Image (cartoon, rainbow, N blue to C red; front, top):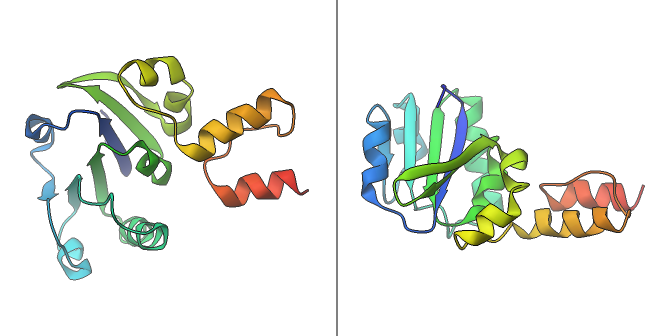
Length: 150
């Protein structure tokens, strides 16, 4: 993987072996502070962001980007991929697919085969696009609503 500023890694069977691929990242597995993040150039969140509200996630990811902190979010929740530009999907310890988030999410059959569903907004966008109600796939509610009501 080339150096990208924000990445989500999704796996249905999270394994600490994934961390071996990212030894130059500071691993966060429980509570953290923003001051702690500022002291690091590269951070890796290991399946701890699943319970944060959308507001807190947005604030966190904006903070990381604004402070030029490279980050990886390893999770089993594919919904969290909507906060990053790049997505890697692992099955056990091997990469099945990776690329720009939306391009990876277009591989619905592959994702479903390993037990992952599309994020709700993406699945809804695909359905609305199939019925020619919208022109593009949306990763968030705001842009979908904007297109529907324009």
